Length: 149
Image 1: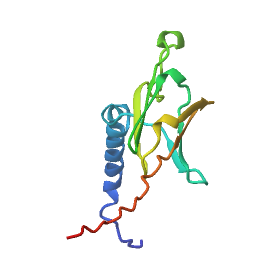
Image 2: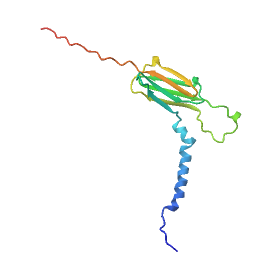
Image 3: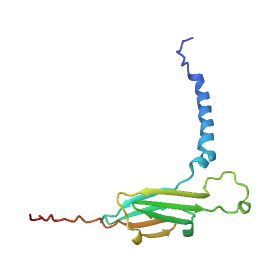
Image 4: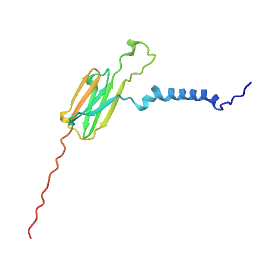
C-alpha cells in the first residue's frame, strides 16, 4: 500500500461549488435583473469624414413608436419600451429571458451635436442614429486699440 499526500481542502470543493450555484441562482437570475434593469447593445462611432457620430442599437422585436430619443449638449439618451405579448395565447412559460419593460442608455459624446440635423432610422431590429457635430465656435481675434493721452 502506497501513501499518497492528501489535499486538505478537497472535501470543501463540493461545498464551494454548491455555494457558487446558490449565489448565481440568487443574484444573476431574474431577481437581480429587477434591481439592475435591462439594457441593449450599442455601438457608437465617428464617420470617416469626422463630421458626425453614428449610434447603432440592437433592438429586435421593438416597434419604432416604442423608441424615444433625446439629445442635449453632448449627451444622447435612448429609451425603449418593450411590450410583452399575451401569455395566455402562448401557454405557460418554462423559461422567460426576453426582457419586457423600459430600457434606456445614455451616451456622452466627445463634442456637442447638432440635434436639429439628427436622423434616425429603424431597420430589421437595428436603430441607426446619425447626429452631425455642432459647428465649433470659431476663434475670433480681438484687436487692442491704444488710447491717446
